[in-house]
Image 1 (cartoon, rainbow, N blue to C red):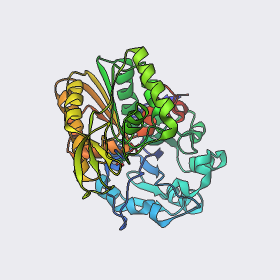
Image 2 (cartoon, rainbow, N blue to C red; image 1 turned 135 degrees about the vertical axis):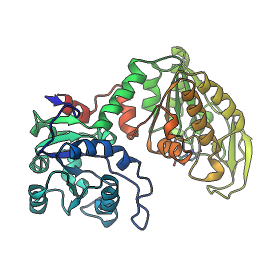
Image 3 (tube, rainbow, N blue to C red; image 1 turned 45 degrees about the horizontal axis):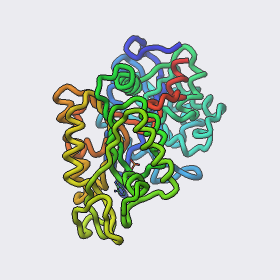
Length: 397
Ligand code: AMP
């Protein structure tokens, strides 16, 4: 049976916590965005302060065949020590003799960080033997990795069966599920979804599944050009997925039938190459010169989107409006982030999800001005689609 983190007595227990410490590291192995680690601290504090010890399991990146230096979790040790004030032990392999010995000697208030789970292929395969070896390290299983809750991996789902009486969500999982339920089940209208990012292909399912839930859908980012082109616009060198024209048109038609207003940009900032210092100009979205590409939404679009956002009571935002990593094409994303923050200030409930939208919200210092920043983009969107997340089901079952 599922237990509750606030009620559970952790004293003397070794708690296996699946976290999402999949943080970006630069070439010198420095963490460039600590959001995901910071988010897990209250969960870890709860266990440590109650006299328990913590065994951390995570993945980082996408290692192909076994261990790879650039994906080692050992580069997180010092930051983790700093943030928790706890003594951090590290196991070079997430299973095996050393991990077992370290776990056995772990004392209350201490943390054992296990090396990257995905150095074993068995993790993503959801291998039961591998899960049982992880399970052998602790007395309690806690899942606080919402970012991987949509995967049926060994550490996110399979392992739960070894802890039928001692499994629970951490605070992140609890909050994520509650915040999405607030958007979907307790929706105040109008409900506006803002979708951006690179490609339609990754998001078409989500768009289609949101159609019976939202009142407005604002489209931006690279994916807007597939829609514009499918409608007969001239988009030059902009990112386009030809094979999705039919699908895009079908989506627009579906929206019409369901009474959802889909907004597409009318103007765009174009560039003559994919670089921050490329030549730039403003263009009609339907009339981009042959050798130019659209890399951001334009001021007229921003104005319209701002108005819709300002009149919304529930807002869901996933994906940047342009190539915001380049400062010269970040204006649209920044303006939308500010509009969402302003609407929140006036009482709207806003949920931000997806690595890049989260990065944008952080970049513009607006994290505390929106209602909830989700740490798991893919998982959040699948949950919004109404899919059952294996990581959630395994705990609840
Ligand atoms: P996603 O992971 O699908 O949310 O895509 C995020 C990425 O989309 C970011 O790295 C952006 O730079 C990129 N992106 C946004 N707008 C455009 C655009 N107009 N052309 C190309 N890439 C874009």
